Image 1 (cartoon, rainbow, N blue to C red):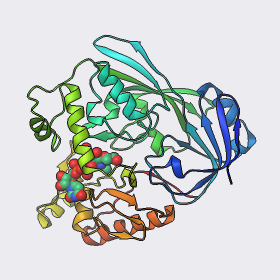
Image 2: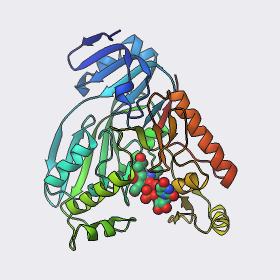
Image 3: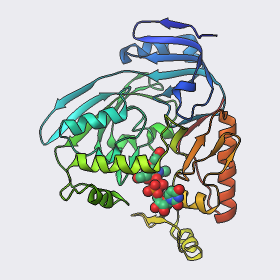
Image 4: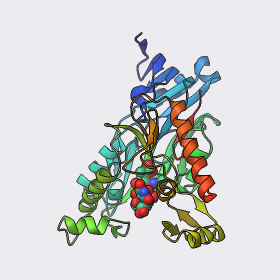
Length: 348
Ligand code: EPU
């Protein structure tokens, strides 16, 4: 049965809405109400509907970092606002971007305009509004470095809030938005991007890829091209097979635990943080525990990258979540380290 759409001007309401095309793990979940928001200034009106106000709420971008373990008995807000505005240009440009813009389109636009900073973050799925939530990062750069402020609707204080970088409390795949789920609806992100910066080439594979491309003096767009090559080689494309990128965070352990593990497993891939703690490669732990390429029904771990949970076809959210737990348990039994999911896991 086709879901009924009601156009409210500025936003559209859909009851009992299918979400399969709105999450990259392709889970066949439904939302009691889906509100597609095209005009952020209409948010207050929408949030005031009793059905919305009294129920649960979830903000969704492209659904590239979300696992629905069942239907969502509440309102899903799909932010579909558009707009990129250069507010100030110079050595550093201030650029305000609407939450619904596609992240990768924005990165490519910045490179075309000659702005530096986001080149290592090309090809990450998702929207601009979702980027600060989990502080997206790849190849030695995190988006937090380039965010000046985040504009959001504060559902607790019932007002527009502008959070500067400190207030966002960014950490590895974490932020105030992730720690206080449901409180903020990100409406726009303001970036400060330099015209040039010292390029980050140290992350595994970038220099080798640039050499292979025959580039001796890289510009930001060369780095972006190298990252595109690396990502396409390593990560399965969500357009081909359902996945949400890295499903597990690289666990961070204290110095003693890290060192003991490294003594026992000298090949363990790990990175020493500034605080003396070790970040361990979850991919290595999962692969070494034997889960890479394994599956149960249609839920499995990619055979290309051990961090990626994949939906081979018709796996339900509950089946995917059960397989993820199976991996977490297996890694815990083998190494004593408990992995945590990176995406937001949403129950029914
Ligand atoms: N490795 C394995 N098996 C695998 C894949 C990797 O053992 O199947 C080991 C390799 O030894 C490799 C190490 O893991 O040297 C690290 O792999 P990779 O460089 O691919 O990085 P990652 O730790 O697996 C993180 C991010 C990715 C990001 C890459 C590149 C997290 C959870 N993931 O992955 O982010 O693209 O670094 O910077 O931090 C995402 O968040 O969705 C994501 C894809």
